[in-house]
Image 1 (cartoon, rainbow, N blue to C red):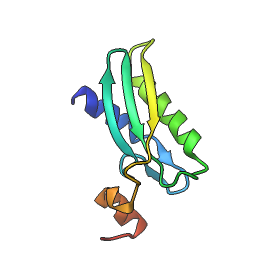
Image 2 (image 1 turned 90 degrees about the horizontal axis):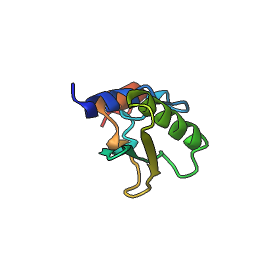
Image 3 (image 1 turned 180 degrees about the vertical axis):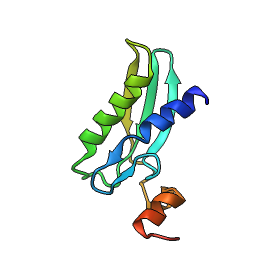
Image 4 (image 1 turned 90 degrees about the vertical axis):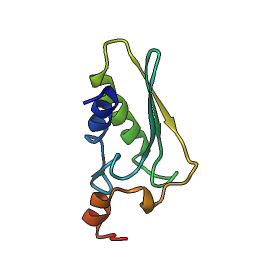
Length: 101
C-alpha cells in the first residue's frame, strides 16, 4: 500500500454526518498531494452552505495528521470548482443512497 493509499484510507474514516457516507466515496476529495512539510487536501462540500463543513474539514485534518510524522503540516483547501454533483460519488455510495445512475 502506497503512502497515498494510506492517506486516502484514513480519509474514509471521515463521514459526512448528514449523509452517513465517507468523504472519499461521496466524491468530496478533489485532490490529495504530499508537500515538502506534509500534505495538502483539496476538499469540497455538497453545498457551500453545508452546516457541517467546519467539522468535516477538522476531522479530515485530524485523521491525516495521525498518519504523518509529528510536526507535519496538513493544509485543507476548500474548493468550489467544479461544483460537486452526485456523479462524483462512488457506485457504492450511490447504491447506499438508492441513487442508481
